[in-house]
Length: 126
Image 1 (cartoon, rainbow, N blue to C red):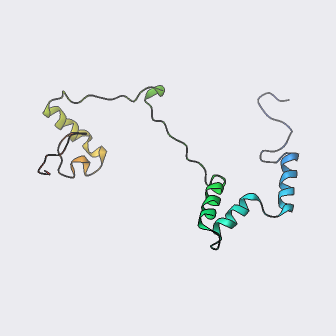
Image 2 (image 1 turned 60 degrees about the vertical axis):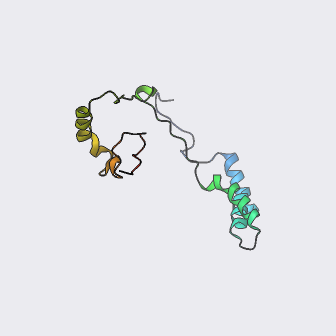
Image 3 (image 1 turned 180 degrees about the vertical axis):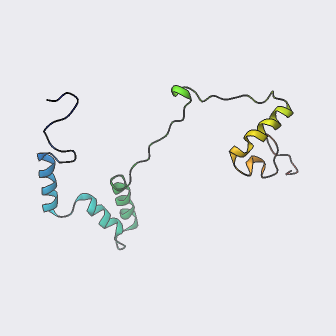
């Protein structure tokens, strides 16, 4: 065998004998379980509850499951945060001038709320 390189064997994607045999038997047998579930699901004369059960049962075979995404900081650690509560108004204005456009063209003050994140809007709506 060559070092670091595969030689011989099945080409990638070629089913093994057991898989090929099972696929032939399924093709010979007619309707697969998935085809049956989809047929029932699409039958307007089937009861709604039965159609729903078939849709739920067939979904994992038709639609890939979305995986969750875990957000993390550098090297899998916590996400770094910066406490801006003790900054002067001038410093905060400079930060907003630099980074305000990164949050979107309207920013989060578009509704007339000039308070910080998590602050309640003034009672008069301004």
